[in-house]
Amino acid sequence: MEFALVTILLVFLLFAVLQITALLYVRSIVSSAAADGARYAANAGVDPAAGGDRANELISRSTGGGLAHAVQCSGEPGRDPVSGLVTARVRCHGQIRSILLPIAALVTIDGLGESLKEGQ
Image 1: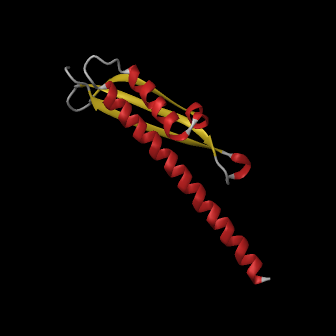
Image 2: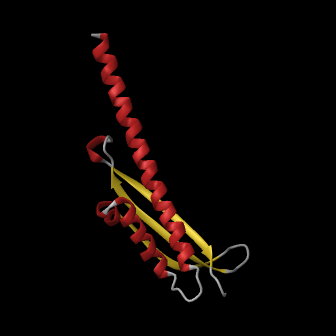
Image 3: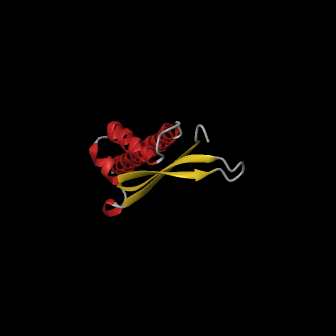
């Protein structure tokens, strides 16, 4: 009897750890893609909007098509608040389904990458 109760708790704990690990993995991919997209858009002669496309492509390659449609990235020009220099900014935002949360709840994933624009 005690073995069955402890086993149920341990299995639930295992699935919870797997869920948290998967969410942290996805967040890491989205943040890395946003940073890489911002670095790409910071190159001289590259439109800042191209950084969002680059980040979307990286997410699609890293995780497959399902997540790429759930998380969308966009690139835009920006300004550094301290120095006033022009930056390329890539924002990624989306919601993904959780495995263990009640009724497949949606979890929000955000990522931001910003890099100083070359030649400005």
